[in-house]
Length: 351
Image (cartoon, rainbow, N blue to C red):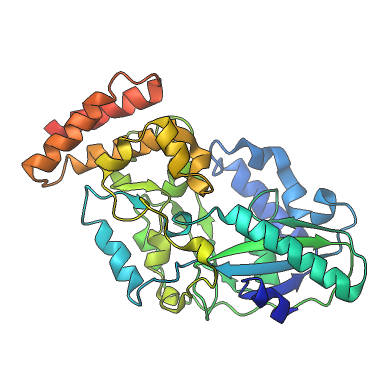
């Protein structure tokens, strides 16, 4: 099966059982603490996330898969390159995973092909493929099936590939031999926790999504809390800091597929350039990208915050003027969310 998986662009596959009962208390405690923020679907699904056979009746095994996503032309010192972007406040930072094609589309179709290939070999089997698209405990299933261990940032870490990979699952109604988990190798390292700009990793293996920049810029659809806005700096979609700081990501692997190559505009663009996109341009430039799911309003909201943050730094007079002009042009936007964040951003010029 590993060879079939590699032919489809996956780096590794494994098999997990479906008894996740030992995770239920932790899940309930996380929800009770409100760490899911406005992701109401997390609470709505409740324990179904930890009960694969309730999500897909008849499931007795879960095939897990991981797929590396660093663009094929990524430099060896990519972590240094990414850190440097934060020192160019007028440059927009999009999380590495979102610079190419929507991973949901890539993984789901290839998981389906993998399932069909396995069924040809082993006989008819009921199956359903997922990738970050249903109440599935992806990281835990990956851990149990030997894809890696859970880092203190809660992401899955591999000694051979760091954490720069996507996960996918195939729920099947056929009992398959389980693959063994691997041992953890974080030790006393707390680099990911120390690097988090907002302190969202509140304890080892525990993340408060309400403070996470990825949650704030992608999942959260309301105003970004005032006290957190300066901490977003120039990140406009997602955040990679906990992964950039992780020593294991020196082993991160480049994607084998062209799907995750960087699309135009997603690296090196200025905040002013991206803020100028009207909705039609936004939809055209994000077609087939995971970024499209946040919509134009959240896109403008995020960039407005980054522009406000840039105005508090030592910009050239021309860059400062360009940002202020761009913001003023959106000051009467139809969306109250956009208007409020624009006004906040403009006010930063006098801070």
